[in-house]
Amino acid sequence: MQTAFEDGFEEKVEQFFNKFNTKRLYNKKEVIIRADDDPLGVFYLKEGYARLYTVSPTGQELTLNIFKPGAYFSLMWAIGETKNTYFFEALTKIELLRAPKEALVEFVKEEPQVLFEMTKRILIGLDGLLGVMESLMFGNAYNKVATVLIVAAKRFGKKEESGQVIIDLPLTHQFIATLAGLTRETTSLVVKEFEKKGIIHCQRPFFVIGQMKSLEKEAALSRQQQAHPYVL
Image (tube, rainbow, N blue to C red; front, side):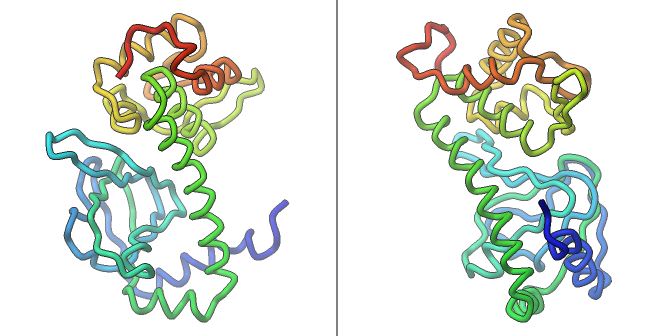
């Protein structure tokens, strides 16, 4: 059950960002912040989806987080005073608001409830990220893709009366691969196997999870129990 403050949190944060009259629109795949560049401020995502990603020395992309409306980013740089080493990119057409770093820091100092709610959301996100990290470190391709789909369903899913969950985020095989740390080819093989089993199906441009418990089993199975041939 949400508190009265939680209900008004988005409005309070948006009012703060609106003070600076810095609305900016980005098109799909447009880079918002480049790795090693200092951000121009702290961003509030009003509409659309964005991602945070890194690129390996061999050019492979790894998506580390997805932001949805109501999210804010470059907080590590603003509050943690760390150097930005990541790329931020629009996944869809997006609308952003921006506030100066110093103003954001003063805002959260003066509004402890806002800081608490921001911290709470960051920790919930971290919990999901740790689950993905565990899968990336110890799981095989099936564990990884299943974990990515489960996390996406929890964050962006809409449950239907039938019990199916529609992931309300456009996901391509290539994008799932960047989340799972796999090649697109391996990801496609795993996705097709899940589709054959009836666990998921594609309702373009979205994925639909028809059997969440089966998908959770795919995510939880240990490497020793797996007999699948596509292991990376």
